[in-house]
View 1: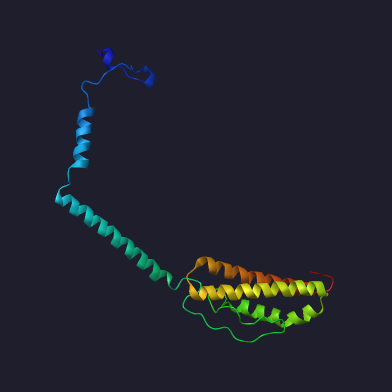
View 2: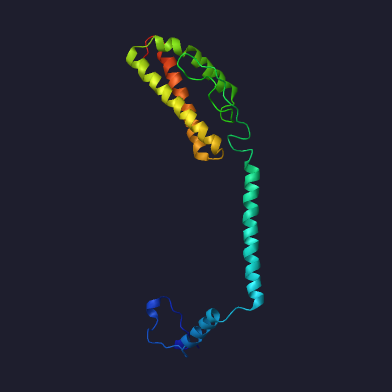
Length: 190
């Protein structure tokens, strides 16, 4: 038969708070802590720790090297940045001002942009003066932003934030050009 000492406890409230351990454990714990922190580790253990640190550092360097090697051709700029052509239309925007990069090399983008730029001056001439001034200021602002971002990317081609900002600027330019083109349709306005 089992005695009262062997009964199963179902919650902490059933335990007695007055039970003392058979011996005091703190002096032994304190002695172990002092010996671990105060005494020097054996030379073999120190060598092993140093070896693991060097191994971890080598693994980190290798990981970074592999990442750079893999990413060198995956970035939007790749290895191709060419000088833009000097052709300029009547609005003062250079037609080829975009960096020859992966996000600009799409032939459909280039073709659509060129078509929109060809018809831009005629569309601007047909607009009332306040609208024309607004559109021209927007396009000039976008062109300035593109040149600044392209210049900054020339100095730091792997900067992801600059790449994203440049893509957004190209998209803004296309939005303005498309809006101007659509606004020239009869019955529509800006």
